[in-house]
Length: 145
Image (cartoon, rainbow, N blue to C red; front, side, top):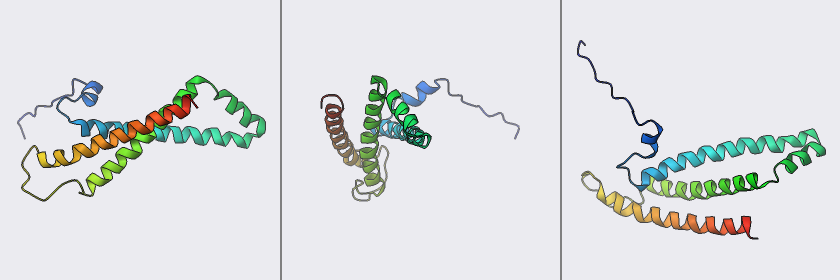
């Protein structure tokens, strides 16, 4: 193979991954789904360490809980709630889509697959509205009640 191959490099870096241009809402929801999944995993690991401090006795447990009683961690807990609400509802939407329940009747696949988008986009919008309602109610519970 004497012919040289052209290697195209990603000159946009992280910006090109996040702001990809032609992607639809579903692609951004998928990216946010992955990010929230990693955030929930990070929270789970931190939660294990915090609850593991109970092994140090009552004084160690109370010291850890005392250190977590500030507005920064309260806001962090709310972010975990946001991530969980989005991740759970979007996960249900993805399962419904992957099972083919929102695909419609089989037909010849002709790009840009408009039938699939027409059927899945309303489900995406409904799921995001439900997620927004849950976030508003959760925010009221976190900060007002």
